[in-house]
Structure formats: structure tokens, C-alpha cells
Amino acid sequence: MAQAQGYARPRPKIETLVDLIFGLSLSIGAVALITVSAPSSTAEINRRLLAFIFTASFLITNWMVYTYQMSVLPVETNFVIYMNVVMLILVATVPYLLYNVEFANPSLTPQEYSVIQDYASSLFAVDLAAILAILASFSHIISIEEKRLVAPALAKSFRQSRNVQAILSVIVLISLAPVFWDLSIFGVQLRLYIWAIPIIVYWIRRSVQSR
Image (cartoon, rainbow, N blue to C red; front, side, top):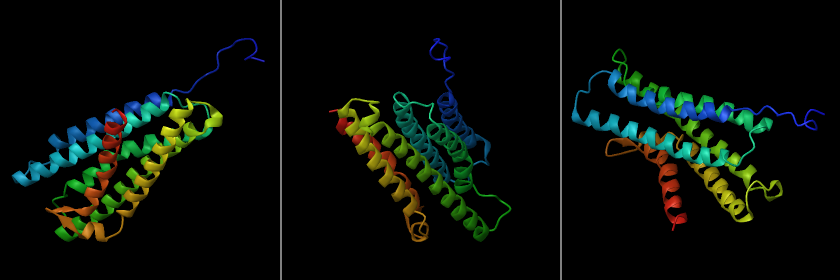
């Protein structure tokens, strides 16, 4: 009845809040670099910078995907709203989890800190994988041609994105295997290299598609 009379329908703006949390998480990561204890070596400086660059790259990359999806995705549906709420929580916890992966508590023994690092990195991997899975679900909704949210050619592109995002989510989850924490290359656990794969794949696909 109200719609028939031309009344405006309330529209949730949760995507705006998610945008804000992406920016806030990025800022917290930058602040963490100057609030922790002073580095004791040049190698530690490099490690902290690389950790921040990785986090910033991951957040920025996924924010770009997210905003592109939200430009065509109807936010009124319950599923999309709930997934946005979960996305809020996942993105907000990224800085805290990375902090516990990278920065040692001086009161802990090396063995105790190693346990904390392993646990925090496992949670971080689950966090990243869940974000990718949510993005894959959004791409799936947009790709359904019956919904006519985008042109058929774009629907095909979103189906490809859905498949890639789902595969990347599984790859990040595979990094939970203990062997990827025990093995290292140039002093960096293999698990951390695996986390960089989604970023690399996104920018390669973007470069290829823009040609």
C-alpha cells in the first residue's frame, strides 16, 4: 500500500560502514608500526614493513572488489545484509590478528611466542579465507542471469570471479596445514607466501582484463 502511494522505502547503508571499517583497519595497521617497541635490527624493520604492505594490499584489493560488487548488488536482501555484517567483523579483526602474528610479547619465551604466532596465523588464514568466500558469494548472486543485475557479458565475468575467489579461499585454508608454518623461505613461513596469492591473482586478472 505504501509503495503504491509512492512512499520511499528505507534502504540500509551497511556498505558505507563496511567501507569505513576497511579504511579504519588500514589505519590501525599503520599506527601499529609506530606504537610497538622499537625494532632491534634492520631485518625486523623489513619484516614489519612487509607485513604492513601485505595487509594494506589485501585490504585495498578486497575493498576494490567489494565496492565494485556493491555498485550493482541489491543490499536489501537478508543474505547480503548478514554477509555484510560478517564482513565487518572479519575486516575489523585483521589488524589484531596480524599484530599477534608479527609482534612478540617480551614476557613470553620463544617457545610460548611460537605457539601464539602459530595460533594467530591460523586464525588470520581463516579470516582471509572467509572474506574471499563472502566476496565469492556476492559474485555468485550478481552472476545469476535471471536476476538481471548486470548485462550477460558481465554476468559471465562475475561467474569467473566467483570461481577464482572460491578457489583462492580454499587455497588460503590449505595454508592452515602445519607443514606450511614449519617450512620457511628466506626466514619467512611458507604460509605467509600463500596468503599473497589472492593479491597477485587479482592484479594479474585485472591487468589482463583491461587490455
